[in-house]
Image (cartoon, rainbow, N blue to C red; front, side, top):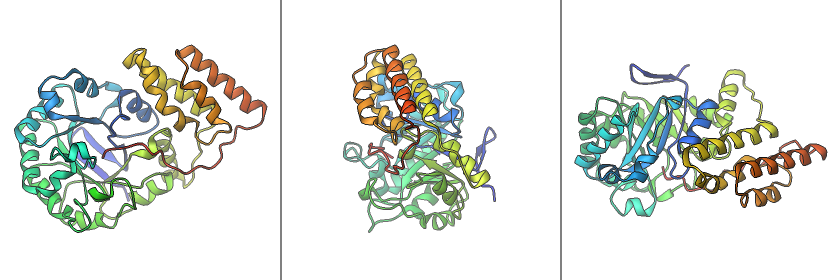
Length: 344
């Protein structure tokens, strides 16, 4: 049975696999790589509504979009309905296909400002924010949230219904509570319960970290699409692999050479977008791309001190030749997901 994510005439995705918004990760270069490897919809890093309204340059860089990545959403956060509506309008003017509101961020610096998942304690304010954003723009407005503030206060069904009434066109649920952060196990059993209260598409997020879990999540009752977060860090191939698995019940993992080539392409995109500073910023990605390769730690130590693209290419090529000469081109199993802070 096909799952449908339909929020406008131009955004109608069947069996959609989306890239989750992740602070410090889902910049334009990473989004482009994920798009090339099969992600259906991309989300920017979250951006503070107050910063957009104040015309902060750094925030506008976060929402710089490219036609190659469409459809793409700009994700905003804040707690002032009027300011949030202004930020939604700015996102529309910057070319977003839709605006997503962050009601799920669990980190203290956001929660302490009564934004992100802290707003789950104020469902009426959440509804007012969404309503004002919907009224401010012509593009769809969606939301991303959690099950509740904590296990004693799971109010997602109430919130979902209020959000649809406020005009939200879809809701993504990370199936953990705020106090869980990214620990513990996501509880997908809430999805059909939530769907009983809404007619808009519901996107499932949380513990979707392999082609097999993508397929299982897609079969969950009430799901309209699924969203992948941390599992895509260093492994953007998961989108292609998941689609292969859903079609053929099997998939082919990216070979060592392809992982290295995509790593270098990702680096080129980063340099194009951010200049020489991109070389330093990209260093966080080497661990993911080299995960499972023999002797990766030594190669990574050299890569993180390299100062230009040609030097990095030389290190990568030398490392590949070493693996090939020693018949070490097979990846060893390593299911561990990167321990990055993905604030959604």
